[in-house]
Length: 338
Image (cartoon, rainbow, N blue to C red; front, side):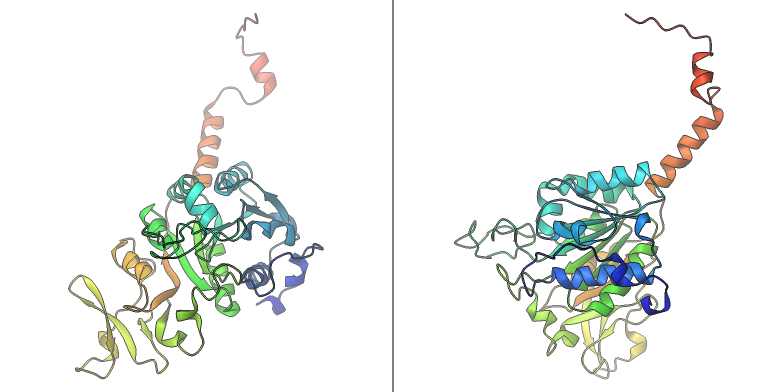
């Protein structure tokens, strides 16, 4: 962890005043990112933090790294260009449910499909905060806001489902105020080669306060969430006596010790399985029918776009007779300039 490294998490704190609302979940996420980078032993000059527009997109100002505050929804496009142009940089994209899934949706899904080596942190507070409280692509059906005074009639996106449906190879989920778990998720995302999406269930105290409270409240979180770990049974609950099984093609919540069910009957999580079927089911689980899945839901190796581009360029250059500008001007070709 950070205390065992020469790098300290404070090394990643800039001298800028943090201008988020007091109590905003963004503060906790910033702290988690800085701790994760210190734990990973990053050097400040090898990190680039890219954002679009939204409350979360102030992030680059508060990081003592390279940064680029871009335009609405285009963070994925800029981050992709940065990574392909300089594959040695560790590129982190900061985005929100509005920035990534509405105006930026096209860039978001194609970044995932290409599997560019980016670490994307998706702040999901189910609201537009910076523009003062409009419903977002992840707002619940029936949500009342300034732009849906009678309740939205739209079905919301599920970020995990969207990510996996776009051929995503890494998806994890955590809660803003659970710093210890968040740091671990960010570390796992950083270690993954390819596009990693970490959805953070984040609270907006002004426009959508306690939107995730049903599952994040300490009194109930153990029974309403499940922290998945690769290779371990999918067990949860305050007494660790609940688990997940398959009932035909559907997931089923069961109680260990009832109806002859033992721990051996509980599904074991395989985050590295190439087949997406169970990963999709886990990502889509919602309370109250199911516990909400936290942890690394999917982590699968696949060809990485920027690595493939670099390899392809090297192969083309190796085969080309032209190795330098001097080779070009002495190649015998005659160019007519009008």
